[in-house]
View: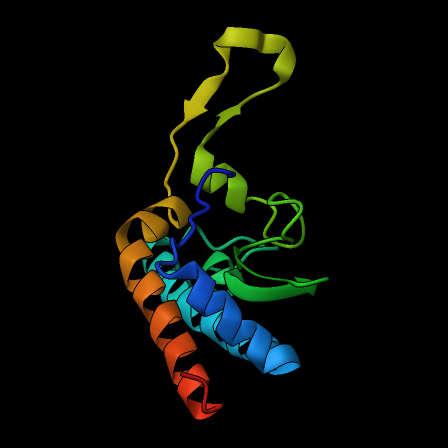
Length: 155
């Protein structure tokens, strides 16, 4: 798993799997809704941890905060949620490419200066959000799945 990823352990996996098979194609929207609801918890926490930077020509204060989104992906039988800035494949992309530099820290100056470059410390917002809200997001995911299964009449 990548840094900041988290997973949920499912108790009674055989029963849960049987319920999903019973639902067939109706299972995918339930899983998407659940992951999106959990992702929104992480998103809100991450947005609350972002500090506004200086007002610059290309980046107004609040740009990084507003760029934190919940994105959904489903390929084959897999459903995934991605919470963050940039694309799910590249944290350092888009208008808020600097989100990764804020999260992990970086060095100022030209590379040819080597160790003489100044360190800019990390100001984690995503990893802190996951650390703080992991359990709450997991509980929301599980509860949303239960509600979806009940709505579909699966027990």
